[in-house]
Length: 239
Image (cartoon, rainbow, N blue to C red; front, side):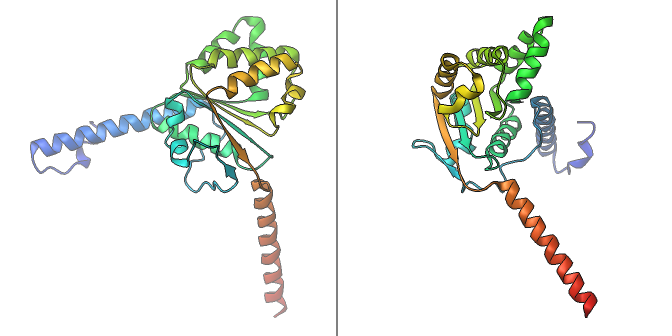
């Protein structure tokens, strides 16, 4: 309050103190949200503002308001985002995670391959348990890019351990470029894969993503813009 007391115009004592305390509380909430965002480990801080939902097919029983209002987190429901590379799965997962942090919720974001590597590195020293506890204590756990890199048997078992500890204790968002029938290609064990999918699908909403790669479209758009710019400059020079 010492930093903001001069920002409030004084009309009367009650009005002044009410406004001062309101600003102080808002500042505290904002600082906590920024700490939660940093601790979550997001690769970027994209928000839902401007997000294009046209490639996303929502399942029956899930509407966009329920999704963006984070009611699924409050109900400890899971989201499974499945679709081709570049269709906006990770962007949506991060945006929902950012919004959760802004509401004071704790979030853990991990790319599947990176998480497995971390668990394997920490396990010999007996430190993997702390990472697993940090994940399972969060309100929302985002597991990104399942299916991009095959896992070793040890890594698959440790990731299964994380999912098992998270099961029904928190909300999990999982993104993948593979349909469930091909997950055994990544985890290598059909029984383990079936048990893992069973835990993720229970209390879950499955979102499918279609269409061309958003990143590829951006790259093509930049290329076309650069070509138009060069053509325009060449025409101006000739004239």
